[in-house]
Image (cartoon, rainbow, N blue to C red; front, side, top):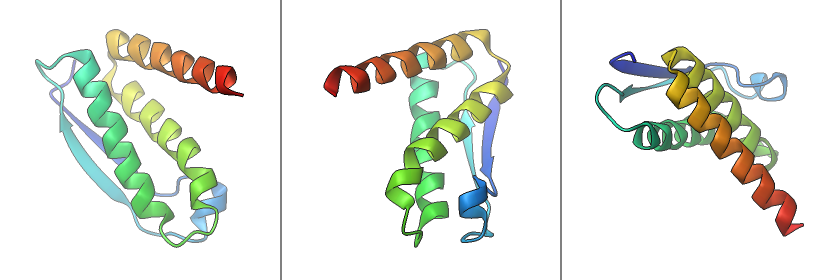
Amino acid sequence: MIRLLVIAVSALMATTAATSASAGEITIKVRGRPTAEVHAEIIQAAKQLCQEDLAGNPAASDLAPYCVREITRDAVARTNSPELAAFNKAQARSVYAMRVALR
């Protein structure tokens, strides 16, 4: 696994591109850390970047979950870590199952 992961976001989606021209970047240390811990930190960073990028957007609450999901997917893909990819996929399935069960 790589030593550092830089999560960057510029234009999140076509709907938010018009409201934000800024780009954010957060560096996460991944070497020697447990997969679950790295994944949690990636999600936290994604939430922070999305919050910054969607600030002032009237649809921010609707777009935020998609923004976090896409940034997380991109960051996990950049690590080239099969363990982290599998963990992310398992987490996504459990969250989806929970949302379906709550409806």
